[in-house]
Image (cartoon, rainbow, N blue to C red; front, side):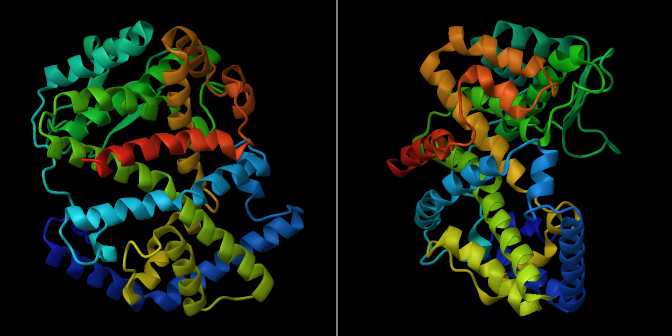
Length: 399
C-alpha cells in the first residue's frame, strides 16, 4: 500500500510514503540483514560444492544461456545508463521541480491522456493492430473474444491484475483482465492476448515442450504491446498527451530494463563481496546498493539517505537469486526484434516470428532465434533494442 503512494500526484503523499517505507524497513533491518547474509552464504556453499564458477551460473543454466550472453546484455545496458539520466532530467522539467527526489521518480506526468476506450473499441484496436502485422495472429486472438476465452468485466470478488493461463495443450488458453477502459488497460489486453496467441501456437509441442524458458516467456506479449502502442498514439491529438503517453511507456521500459540491470549489478556486488569478505553489515549492503543506483541515475535523481535501505524490500534477491536480468533480456530482445521487423518488413519477418512462437520451448533460445541471424553474445545486438528506446526518448525531448 505504501509503495502505491509513490505513484500519487501529490508530492507530499509521495514524500511521506517514502519516509514510512524507510521507517518500516529500518525497524527490521537487523533481521533483514541476517536473512540476506544467510541466503548469500547458502548460495556460496551450494555453488562451491557443485563447483560452479560464479554465483550467476545456476540461473544462466536454468535459462539455457551461456555466461557470455548475459555479460553481453549487462555490458550493453550499463553502457546506456545515459538514457535513464537524460529521461529523469527531462522529467524534472516536466514536473517543474528544482530537483527530482527519489520519491518523485514515479510521479504521474501532467497531461496524461484520460480517454476512455469501450470494450468493443479495445477489441477492434487490438485485433486491427494484430492484423496489420499478421492475419493469422489476429485470427487466433479473435477466438478469445468469440469463444469467451477472455474475461474482462470488473466483478466483486474477482482476482485483480491480469494473466494468460495455457491450461493444457489439448484445450486452449484463457485470459483474465480487469478492464476499466483507459489506454493502459488496452495495452494490458494486447499483452495478455500476446501470451494467449503464443500459448495457442505452441500447444502442438505438447505439455512438456510448449512452455518457454523465462527469457523468452514475454516475447509475444511485449511484441503485441508494441504493435498496439503506435495505434494508441494515433488517437491522441494533443502533443502534450502524446508526449506524456510516450513517457509513461518509457518509464515502463526503464523499470523492466535498466532498473533490473542495476539490481543485477547489486546482486553481483553482494554475492562477490560475501564470498571475498565474509558477513556483510547493513551499512555495507546499503553502500553497495547505493553504488549500483548512483551508477544508473548519476546526478539526475537525488538519492537521499533514506533510500539507502531500499534494497531490503525486494524479494527476488532472497527467493530467486539472479532472476532479475531475465526481465531486461526479454524486453530488449523484443525491442531488437521489432527493429529487425521494421528493417525487413512483414513478408520476411512474420513467418520467422510465427515459427518462433509455435516452437514453444522445444529448443534453446539460441536455436529458436537462429532464423533471425542474430548473435546474442554480441553487445551490438542488444544495442538494437537500446536504440529503439533512444528513438522514443528523442521524440519526447524534441516536443
